[in-house]
Image 1 (cartoon, helix red, strand yellow):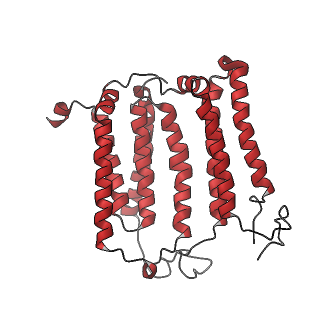
Image 2 (image 1 turned 120 degrees about the vertical axis):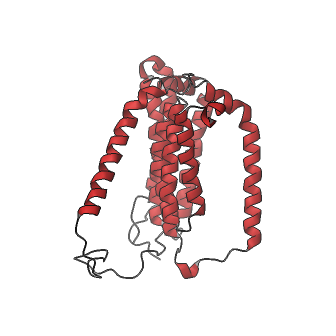
Image 3 (image 1 turned 45 degrees about the vertical axis):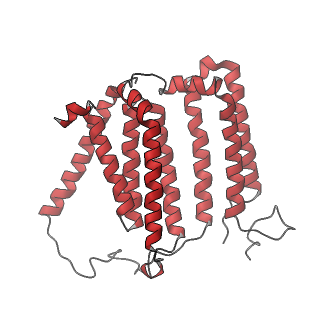
Length: 121
Length: 183
């Protein structure tokens, strides 16, 4: 876990995974029979009929959820280098991380009280 | 041979080729959804660059935050826009030239600034500073103040996101945002 060359197994595994998927999909595409009709080429072959265009502007409330997810995602990432050094850091590191989390907790409570987690209709 | 003249590792050359190809596809493609998919590939290859530089924490964070979370935001931005053909604005030629000149100047500046240092780092990637353990030690001791300040920055980002994205209600029921507040 200390040099780039130790990532070689991951590279090999990725290569095998992509190769297998490409081979399986490519072969089935080449060998399989194809019957194309307008009904078969619909987005949902059986089920709900499609209505309108997929490209329509959606509400901004989805974006709010996504951006809050990103912020807390980044917070959790900072735990990773702390968890590796947990024992060596001792109380000092613990205080540092707790004060960092306290800021996020304040933000969490603010967001919660503002009702950003509630879905507007 | 060109590879030996440049004196760069072949893995780096291959990755750079993939990265630049993906980035060019992002810029030149007219379908924004395809551009986003190519951008994900570009982020993955940049992560591989970080692994080559032995910056493993950055590699993982780049995957989780950029390829995962930021791309979701990009897709949401695309979905917020109206991307139908008929509503596409016609951009004048002067804007194209201006953008090209600005980006070119930025490229020259970056290349000049990074010329010496990046070459040195690329040739000696054996430094262990990018490993998670060492990075954590530095982050929680020497760079503790910037780290805590970043927490305040996140707090500001949360407040800003709620302020911009949340529907404003009447001043009286500030704490009660439930179903009644649908103007």
